[in-house]
Length: 325
Image 1 (cartoon, rainbow, N blue to C red):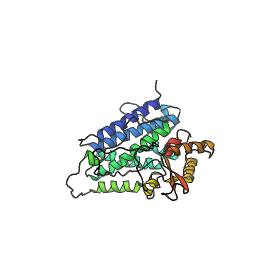
Image 2 (tube, one colour; image 1 turned 90 degrees about the horizontal axis):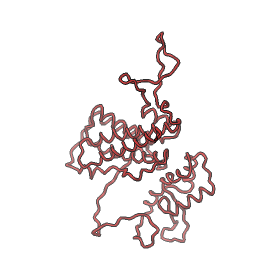
Image 3 (cartoon, rainbow, N blue to C red; image 1 turned 45 degrees about the vertical axis):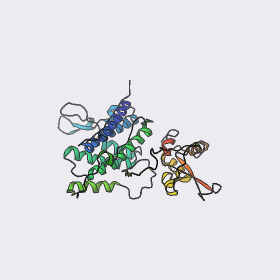
Image 4 (cartoon, rainbow, N blue to C red; image 1 turned 30 degrees about the horizontal axis):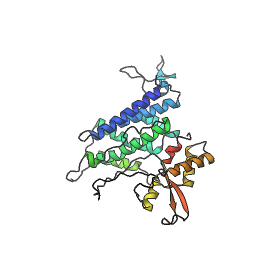
């Protein structure tokens, strides 16, 4: 029999996969709104699963408590679960409450909570009124893509759940909604306030140190291939594989952390972290794979010059398998 937290985790994943499938349909007129509703549902279930894990899988820890009046009409001292007037079932804490509590305990990243606030605004607008302009479509994709990225990271960090079996991506707007004639976009006051709110959530100086994001920009470019069939590439140590060269700027974007920064981030993320042989061996093994780290030479054209290792921010997801937060 599954634990309650495991059941909630499975349902959270199911809701999120449903959101992706709806969004990626080639012709669906309520795409953004439906995605926002299901994605928020998935996140609320995920946070409740995390809450149960942290509270011995006790479902009462999720109940909203209130002081019921005594016979004299005064609020009683004993707290009881607040119940629905329609069914008598207990109310459970909202996504807002759980997210804020998890941020306070450093279990949930602040960027992930900001992303959820933006997604909540889209969901609330869709349910209680409507989203009128095309500006919502673009912002939803940026917010939704970051939300999926954050969902995968949280699932792996909290539950060691690997979601690689699913295609957790949103089809770019250039594919799901081909551009039509460009028209002037007139925003109503509600839309202007929403876009300003989302902009206020985005950090001014994001150094990329957090594996969580508020929004993610998507840039789709079409280029003509010189060959009839373009070749797919991936990082490999196979000497017979075709060579693909990156510029210094591209390498730095891909691997922004040096040894000092990586070590500092590990100290912040893992309370029991030590800069010992275990750490050095693990770091060197990951670096040898060339997927999450690479060497940069003082003289890029001279392999005999001094070199320094740099790492991807995603390396923390690999360290999560070996250290506990």
